[in-house]
Length: 311
Length: 308
Image 1: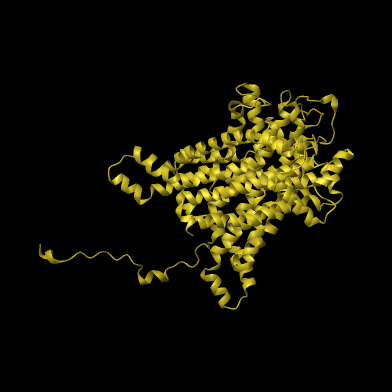
Image 2 (image 1 turned 180 degrees about the vertical axis):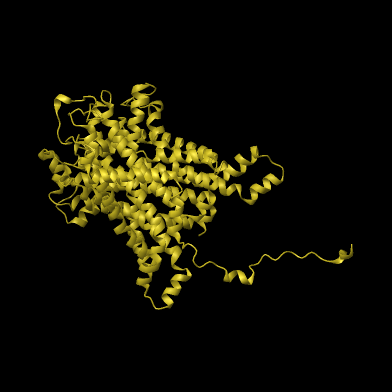
């Protein structure tokens, strides 16, 4: 026991000086988006959502690949007729081919969804970004305007717009009716995100090297705030498609377009005798919304390093 | 606290004028004759037309019209519906029904959110967590009216467990099916809040202390973990109360429930736009009021809010 007085020395686990030189500079590059993409690729649900979205998109672009039937041809001798070869889902009360109407309705739903998202983004992103970045009276003004739009439930606002504009029931008007109010919640998300980013060092650095405030906002702050924006927009795609179908169900949606909501409204009267006429378009609608919702949710998860670590 | 209440109420004033102005503006600045537009595709009878013109003071300049409309609104003079009843009468008859329906939906939403949120949070990362989150998300993605049709067809028509439509004789039992269906499509938000705060609470020092002093999880889970996780779920439930009151149109239309939503639903289907506008205004103002109450509730429950 000669070393009875020797005291314990903890092992050094600092970085050894040499280790810094050994950092592999050719290692895979990484940023928020690459990390998120690597995460997404590992989730089976992501592929399910992607495949459904892709099918809807192809259906919208090339409906004739999916059916030979004419969605606009109602044959009353086929009223509520069951399925037959070439017409896999049967017929509606008016003798329309249910499957053909689903196929041709995809374009309408997707158009309204994408237009609404575009309008929501074009109004919401600048409103939120300018309010958050410039602060002061600009923020107060823009945020109060946002509060007003936020305080009218956007579906009720769309009901008023579509009721009054009964002569203009087309996808563009309905997208403005929905997106013209839905932007307010997006603006809140953008504003919060910009507020979080604007005091970080890279913003100071950008201004220190002489970039103007506006250019810093566009080049640095906004791109770094896009994560939650993309998630919110993907989720609102599903919400917009639902809103269009609901407005059409109430008879104030589209007029003269193939719309799942219109078909569901028509089928209400035959719910007991021909439930398929109601359920098949409902299923198409639900699957579409489900696919976009899951895309949004999975992107949200993938963009959040904390959520990734928790799994 | 008083200061917070006053501040919150003052904030609501511009929002009240802004929202009502916006609704008014949307209706009366549209192309064409706004009064004719209010009748949609129908040809109004000249007496009704004159009554509506008078109701909206259309001979005055636009801004004067708006303030006269607000004055009427605040003094409870909302005009008449197309069937000749006053809006006030219709509202007084329909509102309690909507309140009943929304109460069922909100209570069910709260129970689902707390139950599944607790399960999910306690089993974090395990099968039960993933499965219940997935289920809630799928239910949430079903458009509400599709869920209502499904419930109506399978539970009402096929199984016969519940009345297919409600009709004039409203009872708590007859509202159960639509109320529960609505709750199922919205509980995911509350569930996630519950799950998040349960996970956070379980890592909290006070929970470790509770275990350290010898308590079993049988006591710690309900008393320490669950109770402290309820605040966000309660405020979320209160917020969805407001959203649901404003959003029962489709539910009440499909199940033929004689509430506010049904009044709006019928008015939309018949193109009675004057009634649509009156009720949208009422619902929006109620939505704003409920949101103020939610903020105040939040301040009462969580002291951190009111001292900011």
